[in-house]
Every structure is written in C-alpha cells, then in structure tokens.
Image (cartoon, rainbow, N blue to C red; front, side, top):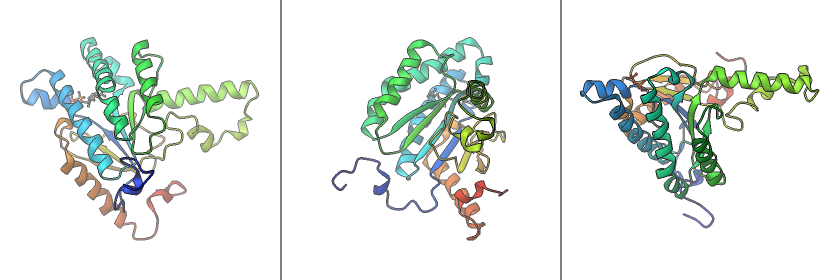
Length: 259
Ligand code: FPP
C-alpha cells in the first residue's frame, strides 16, 4: 500500500475490468433455506446475516465500489410481529457488532429507506454508523432497510410539491436530475447489476428508478448459501452480457435512449 492509501481504496484493486461499480442484491430465500432443514425461519435469517457479512468482504475484495443489499422492505411489515422484530434486531446487532470492523476496513455505510417508522434507538444507531464512516474511501455498503421504491419516489414527489408550492423550485425545473438528487440514493451511481437469489424473478419494489438500465441476474441459490463462487458467477454472467454489446455502448452509456 503506498503512502496515503487506505485498505480497500479502489486504486489498490489490481483489475476492475468489467466489474460493475454498483451491484445491488435482493437477498431472498432465508425462509426456504430454514424450512428445507426443519429449522425455524429465524435460523434462516441468522444464516442470511452471515451470508451478508461474507458478501460484503467478497464484494470489496473484487473491487465493487457500491454494494446495496435489500434487507427489509416496506412490505415486510406485513410479516408476523415476531419476525419483524427479529429482523429489526438483526440490523441492530449488525451495526453494533460489525461497525468497528467495517470502519477499519475503510467501508462507508449508508442506509436507505424510510427512517420515521424505525424505533428511535435504531434510527440513532443508523445515523451513528453513517456519520462514523462518512469519510471512508473504500467500498460503500448500502443497506436498504424499510425500503420500497414507491415509498421513496412518493417522498420525493411530496418534497418537490412542497418546494414548488413555496416557490423554491419552478415546476419546469423538475427534471430527472432533480428527482435523482432527492432519492435516498443521491450521489450514488445507478446499479449496473441487480442479483436476486432463490430463483424468484421479481423486482419487488427495489430500486425501480435506479435500475432502469441494470442487468438482472437471477440465481437459484438460496441467500444463506450465497458465497464467493455464486457472486463470481453472477459477475461472469454480467460480463458475458456486456461483451454482447460489442463496443457499441459502454454499460454506463445506456441511460439515454437505450433499451
Ligand atoms: C428474504 O428471505 C429475506 C429477508 C426478508 C430479509 C433479509 C435479511 C437478511 C439477509 C439478514 C438480515 C440482515 C440485516 C442487516 C437486517 P425470505 O424470508 O423472504 O425467504 P423465503 O422467501 O424463502 O421465505
């Protein structure tokens, strides 16, 4: 490591050729993983947290700059109260136990999703994690928690309407950039690759705006079994698709007039 460099700095990663800068994952299949083994669903989530930790390390290692993980959706509130509170507890535990190590690994943590429904202590924990790691220069780990795209876009619409009503923005000035800049993902690149585990092939209200031009890879692997080989296989599938664009277009150029 040369002077001034920190662990995980992107300059240190030998070759990032065709590694998407932003990978987003719908972590699905915890319940089925547990059911198949006769375990309670909670065990599936616990093992899901281990897969999450593993994936953070592997992604940083492979030179991914932004990793977004869908950990709790706005629809997940409909699950039994015991499961909801278990998932809240897992986030709490993750932040409490892993923050120091993430910080030491130069990972920047961001949480996207509605904050107002979270318990005050959890909100404070999340704010603390973001503040503590704000200046880190390695991978950005984005935890989507109490996240739903429709909710996110609705919050932006409400804010823009209020700004317009107060004369702070002219309706004509509301363009795509004005919306992107107010999303929870402001200042992050759009994901180029979205992975969903467990064989389901839905987007489930995840990054609807941001993933407009993303590649989707669906793998039958259940989330608790997601390992380095599964991540590398998804990246290989992404590269195969990129090659088919054969010099006509760079992955990041597809936002304008492309399909
Ligand atoms: C989907 O599996 C997974 C979730 C709803 C939760 C994802 C949570 C984790 C991976 C670990 C928790 C980590 C944090 C930081 C909170 P499912 O329960 O829908 O599985 P199923 O479709 O097989 O029932």
